[in-house]
Amino acid sequence: MIAGASGVIGAAALSAFSRAGGWHVTALSRRRPVVPQDCVFDHVSADLTDADACASSVAELPAVTHLVYAAVAEAPGLASGWQDAALIEQNGQMFRNLLGPLAARSDLQHVSILQGGKAYGAHLHPVTVPLRESSPRDQHANFYWLHEDFTREQAARYHFAFTIWRPQVLLGSAPGAAMNPVAGIGAFAAICRERGLPFALPGDAVSLWEMVDADLFADALVWSASTEAAAGETFNFTNGDICALRHAWPDLAAALALDDGGEAPESFTAFFADPQNREAWHGIAAREGLLLDDLDALLGQSHSYLDILNSGRVADKAVPMVVSTIRLRQAGFGQCIDSLVSLRRQLSAMVGLRLLPRSCDPQHADGTTL
Image 1 (cartoon, rainbow, N blue to C red):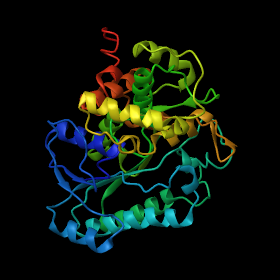
Image 2: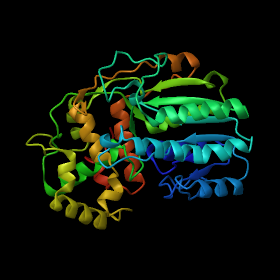
Image 3: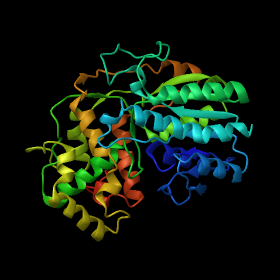
């Protein structure tokens, strides 16, 4: 079962387990995931905030042996909710509503849960470099700890294995996600081309990103599902390199045959709020036959996420955040990908899913293959 299957991680995991063969995959999400047509799965629509509905849905399912929990509730603008007690508890309750009845059936063999850089308190205070999984728990309110503590409790009671993952900045092909920079960058490129605007990067920071290709991460989720070395472990996850989007931007502009010179918008959020840009997207979607003519449905909160990342600051705290991935490599998963290649690949994937126009595909934007 992939919970939160319409999100960046969930959609990639759905495809990965389907491709791997030997799995009967159930997608649990309110929206049906947007994935390639050859992805085979059953879809169950459920509201994780409703305990009774979750219990009823679980009772009707065949045995669930493996769970990837990738669901999350976020506040508008993202950062304001990261310390909100009510939202933290909501995320904890959503997880308990699902894992509780699943674990009680005693079919579970392995569970993967998601954390991230905020586990180290990087959104609250300066952190050490590199961040290691062996560090003591950073004592701050976070739904990560609610998920982890409940997982450990249920695993001890019902005897299943689990893996805790801490991926960095995810690049995927899912629309409407809270944190998918690809959607924001792709829509920005399409509208800039449509209106003849410069493809100039908003923000003024040179922020270090450790990116995560969602498909690469999904391969790691498949690996951990049946690998003893992953049981009971916490793993940081990145593509294996470091990227400064500002430094990579000229290469991306060239790949998309766009001019990155000129004056940049104040922010991605301000750009996508502009009525002219929203109208331009409607025109693009209608002309190109895209799945979503609603810009908000495509973006989710990716524009807010891009602004947070590209400012290099969260809640007025500097966040020089670099993680070590040695533990995962030593456990046996060593795959990697160049992050600029990943970004181009995910833009192409969103074009293939008819979420972005063909002009956003780096393989075809200028008639060449990159």
